[in-house]
Length: 206
Image (cartoon, rainbow, N blue to C red; front, top):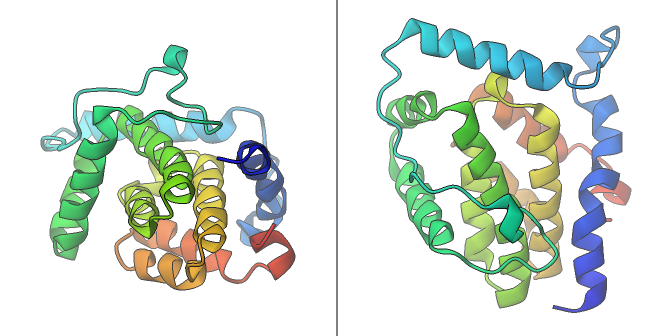
């Protein structure tokens, strides 16, 4: 992969996130953002889910990406078996009906959501490297598997921005791909995906 693409993928997430802090929840303008608060709120929601019990059995693989081996980097990620397992899981998730998708989403814990977002970031690179839009579809589906209240929305936006860039980079209709994925997601994540479409081209096509 050319150096320029690597550099863009490594910085685009941070740059793309800035306008979203304004767009994201205009109804919460009065809210003061505190470092770590979104993550703390997500952890609290996760704790409540566990307290209720009956979470079901998560379909997520037991493996995790290894930070120390560079699995979480987007500079030049090497494929690992977990990527294929998650791609297959995303395919199965997309084929389920809304009720089953909701059950699957509820069964996945917060740490596993982190794994899904890491997968989304990685496949944005794979898509460009292989000129293969199927990776983008899988990455977006992984986002659709996430429950908004149990994740920091800014992490979701970072993954979205990378996938959007990758889709356009390989000549795909990113807007259509995002809108198609929104029907698989829960209401709040779907709103993020659709809300992205309302951003101006300066930010979407960085």
